[in-house]
Structures are given as structure tokens and as C-alpha cells.
Length: 436
Ligand code: IFM
Image (cartoon, rainbow, N blue to C red; front, side, top):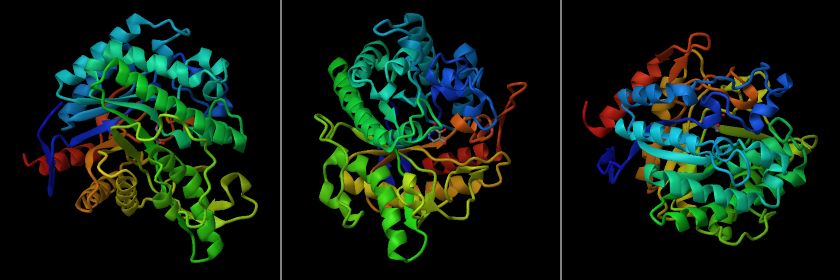
């Protein structure tokens, strides 16, 4: 891992600058529950599937990681496919492990520090059949997978993230119907969230048992929820959404209920059981931040806790609501994480904008990096920033219609073209690191 990097105003062992990807979104033909789910064209807004994606599995990962390094990145966050690595319960695919070993060696050869996520939304088919995250054996099975990854690839992974965005997964796939298994039940949200956190705690323990030097974290997506007006009803709806999306997980990880509950006022509700081994089960925390929602009380919106999102959608794709661009929210959420878990190193593990023309991305990048600096000046120990994403890729239920890349990818030819924002990011990194 690199030891010398700085961001204006502070110095750290290694401030990491990079971009993030996840396996299903860039690798060709991942044999997972998502590959099965997207056989039904109604499951994506454009009827598409990941398919050959950005061809990372069959060979283009190396070329793209070299490009990232040329664009000034010092780190990369990627996902490892559980579905590939454990195609049958307890049977691990050594050829697939070798493929990742080569990819990770190449990344290190390019000077990139690696953060690897072990469960980024997709599951092996056999586990999906067994009940996905609601399988009673899910936590134990995830721990076994973590153990194997630590033993087989641990020396090639600098920072390991167990799970990506527990609240998003529980919301989209268990409360909602748009992601597999698409249960559409609010009770399933709480059961899935508890199971995901149980799996994280079990995975954390397994990673450390197998490799005590592992630096293990968990990645949370934490948008801001603000009331649409000064009315008490809007305030209550915004607090409910924040409580059940953000605070519930931070509380469970830190058990600092008093302090975190203050943000939810009188709503000291916790619908999660106590999970053994969860408290403090991280060496670092990742924050994925895209924007904020303005919440208006709506008695008809029971499924979203009586809050409708009413902001001007400056990041909107058909019916998809990505919220409002609000860089101050990144600063505030970093400070909130720092307060919830004092001294824990923080990484911005995702931050980006769906923008095919790059009209917004340059300013978005500048403003959010400035927000990171403000958070650091306010005492948040931020150690890195990963932009979402390096490349245009498969955006889940939005299919191929949501380009988030610093680098555009032509779907027909596969040709990569860095957007102006990629050059701006390079200049920004160089300026921050003092070698212009
Ligand atoms: O593409 C996703 C990613 O997989 C998880 N976080 C949000 C991104 C943009 O929606």
C-alpha cells in the first residue's frame, strides 16, 4: 500500500484517489442470480442484461486498470463475484481465483491500491434458490466464502469490504420488487437487513481469523433526507426515512443509540434484533453518497414510510429517482459517520452522477471533493475518495441507460473514451498531491 499521499490541509498515511466498479456491472457473463433475473426483459427499463458488460472477465479489466492509473488514480475499488468463485456450495473454482489473482497483480503492478468488495448485490444461483439473504444459512455461508477469499487472495487485497449498501439491497430486493428476489414486503426489509448485518459480522470474524492483518470495512449508502418544508409532518416523514435507511445501520454497528437517535428526535425505534459480534466489527467505514431527498408527508405513501420525494430531480431517469445533487450532504454525512464512530477511518467508496454528456460531472466532482475537504477540516478522518464509476456500466434495473463513467464505453465497439471529467479528475488529483 502506498504510504505517502496528502489532501490539502491534512496529511495521512495514504489518501487514496480512484474510481469504483463492481463485478456484475463490468464483467462479462457472471453466472449469478442477477443473470437469471434479467432474463425477464421487464426487470430492466430497457429490457437489457449485463451480458458481455465491459468484458472484464474475458480480458479487458487489465487495459481499463492501466487506463485508470494513466488517469492519475492511485487506487481502485472492485467487486469479486461470489457466484463465480463458489459455483456450488463449498466447491471453489480455482481457475476463477487465478483469474482474479492475475487481475489484482496487474492492478498492483500499475501502482493501484485495491479495495475489494465481497458481496455487491449478486449471489450464487444455489444461494438464491436456498432463499438468498433470507436463507437461514446465509451468514454462515458468507463467512465460509470470506475465509476462502482471505486465504486465497488476501495478500493481494489492501482493504476488504464485506458487503455493499445493506439498506439499498434490503429496500430494493426485499421491501421492493425491482431487484431479485423481489419480495415486495416491508417485513422482509427488516429480516433481510438483520441477515445482511449478521453476515457482515460473521464475514468480519472469518476474514480476521484467516488473515489477522486484514483491514475490513462495510460500505453504506447514506443519502440525506431533508423535510420539503418547515411543517412538522414533513419533518417527521424525513426523519422516519433517515431512521430506517441510515441511522438503523449506524446504530446497530456502533450501538451509540443516544447520539444517533438524536437525529431522529423522538423516534428511538429500532426494528433490528441485537446481533452478536456486530458492534465495532470494522476497521474502516465506506460511505456511498449520491445526493439528498426532500421529503413531503404523504399518507398514501405507506411503502416509503409516508414520505414522498418532491425535490427538483436534477438526477432523474424516467421513473428513477436519484435525488438532488447536494454536495454539502456529503460533508454532513461524513461528519455524522465520524461522530457515530470516532477515530474510524472513512472512505468515500462511491460518489457520482448519471450523465451521458458530462455536462454536470466536472462540477459534481469538484464540489464533492471540496465537500470531502470540508469534512476533513471539521475532523472527519477521511482516507480516500472513489468516484462511481470508472466506466459506463450495467446499472441494475436501469440497464444500460444510466452512464456513470469517467470513461465512456461504446456499446457496439467497446471503444473507451475518457470524458472531460476524467481529465479534470486527473488534474485535481495532481494538484492535491502537489505534483502538477
Ligand atoms: O451502480 C450502483 C452501485 O452498484 C451501487 N451504488 C450506487 C450505484 C449507482 O446507482
